[in-house]
Length: 214
Image 1 (cartoon, rainbow, N blue to C red):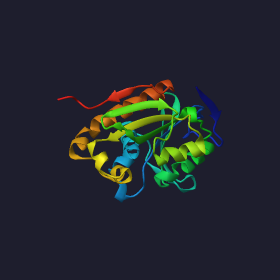
Image 2 (image 1 turned 90 degrees about the vertical axis):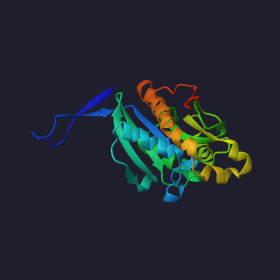
Image 3 (image 1 turned 180 degrees about the vertical axis):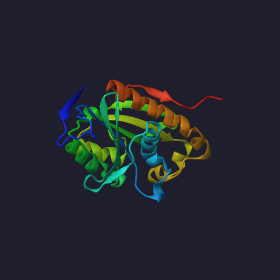
C-alpha cells in the first residue's frame, strides 16, 4: 500500500502529494558486461531482464557506479520494481546485489535472480527458491554475499554439444540457430513468470517447457 507525504516547496505546477511505495521488488539478471559476451548463453539473464524492461516500459537503464550495476525501475501492481544488471563480472555478481539490497533495504524474499543453468536442458525454465550454485559462479557469489534463500528463475542452456566442450567455453558461446529461433518464446515465459511474481509477491514454483513440439 502506498503512503502519502506532502512535498516541500509545493507550487501550483506540482502535485500536492507524491506516492511512496513501501514494497520494493528486486529483479536481477546475471551476465557479463561487454560486447564479447552479448548473446551468449551465460548472458541470458541480462537478455531476459532487457526484454522484460522493454515489454513493460521501464525507465531507461541508468549506470549506478557506486552500486556497480545498471538499474531501471517502474511501479507495477502497487510495488516499486527495480531491475538490475550487475556491471561486475559474473563471478562477482554477489557484491553488486548485496550493495543494492542494502541500499534499497530489500530482503532475499523480495529478490528474484534470472540466470543460466547448465544442469537443465535448453527448452526448460524452472522457478525455485534457494538451492545450491550448481556450478554457476554468479550464483555462488550471490550465496556467499547474500545467502541462498533468494528466488531464482533458472534457464536451461544444456544441449548435446556440452559433452564435447569445456563447460566454461560452452556457456560463453552463442546460442545455435535452432535455439535462437526459440528465444522469443523463452523471453515470453520468463516475462510471464516475473509478471506473476510482481502481482502476487510469490514466485510460482514450477517447470515450464517453452519449446513447441513439431
